[in-house]
Structure formats: structure tokens, C-alpha cells
Image (cartoon, rainbow, N blue to C red):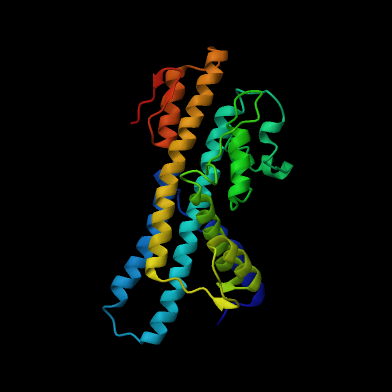
Length: 285
């Protein structure tokens, strides 16, 4: 006998209890990104490899494969967004207890009282500030990191995605294109509306038809992953180096603020990249 409607409500309410532990990579934002992006890509590879061993109807295969490629693309982009918020949370946790220069440093982060309460167990102001926000606009992301990583009593000049006219200026536009594709998949079930097409046309500097169904190919998904893999490595170095510079500045103003070697080791572990803080070189275990 199928479940009754009230019992279905109970079954749905039980879904959040069906969980697994976080992977060990989750302690390091860049490793967490790699785990998520690689798992998503490997899902597609597993499907594509094994389905060819069975007798299939090509039309049905193409329909399901297109849907799966869209979901894999979405997962890879979301792994990138999660990386951004996790690495920002790490920065906040380092800086917030050490710098009390003004209230503007964190003004780009909005937080409701319920958000604070939800993070008591983590004891992380960074997670409280960063996890509830979306990280899907490069201009907003640049504003947050610029103020977050500014020297004390300074407005800051660091831009995560660099100057638009600089050698890496293309990254922001490419990332924003993927963020818009994420919107298409998540909110419109892969339908490119006329509004989506207008935004995408500006980003790609070319015509995008609408209304259409997004139908990414395997090379499309591979290209997106290659770009995000490279951009995460690039961004991780930039943020880690800027973090080390800021901590060095704080330490020079107040050497009793923290033990340089301990802080260098911690930042090195969190970023999976050796950094130097106040002359102390971090050790990566």
C-alpha cells in the first residue's frame, strides 16, 4: 500500500537526517573544492563509460546525458562558490579577533541574529558571516575581499579578480558567465529566458538565443572545470599571500598579538600553501 499524504510529510521531514560525515578535505577550502569538482566530473565519466556497455536507445540516452551534464556543470560551479565562502570564512576568523579598526571592514557581510545562533557550535564568526550569503557576482566578491583584507585603518586595494584591464582581467567575466549559467540551471531548469540571454550576451560579447534549453556538451563541462580548477589555484595563492602580508603588518604593529610561527603554520595548513608571516615560514604537514 502506498504511503498516505500525512505519512509522506513525515518521510520528507526525515530526509535531512540522512547524512554522511564531511570528507577530510573539508578542513581546507581548496581541497574541498577539488573533492567536490572531481566527484562531479567523475560521476559523468562513470555514467558515460558504463552506459556504453549496455543496449541503449540513443534518443533516450542523449536526453538523460544532457540532463546529467547540466547537473555536473552545476555541481562544479557550486563547488567554486563554496570555495569562495569557505576561504573568506578562514580570513574572517584570523582577522576579526586581531583588528578592531572600524566597523566598515565587515559591512559587505550581512548577518541576521538567527545566523549567529546557528553557528554557536562552530565557534566561527567567519562561517556565521560568510555561509549564509551568495558568492555569485565578481564585483561583490571583490568588494568583500578588498575590505576584509585591507590593512588596519585603510580602505584596501586588493581585488581578488584583479583589474579588468590586467593580465587576469578575463577571469571575472568568465566566472560571471558561469554564475549566470548556474542561475539558468538552478532557477529555470536549464531554460535560457530572454532575460538570461540578454545578460549572457553581454558577458560573452555575442548573440545568445532565447528561449532555449541549455544543452552543454562534454567538452563544455570539461572546459568549465579546467577554468575553475585553474582559477581556484590562482585565487588561493593570491588570498593566502595577501593574508600573510596583512598578518605580518598586524604582527609588526603588535608582536604580542600572536606567535608568528604558529600562525604561519595554521595559514599554511588551511590554504595548502606555504606562506611567510613576520619572517616565519609555515610548515605544510
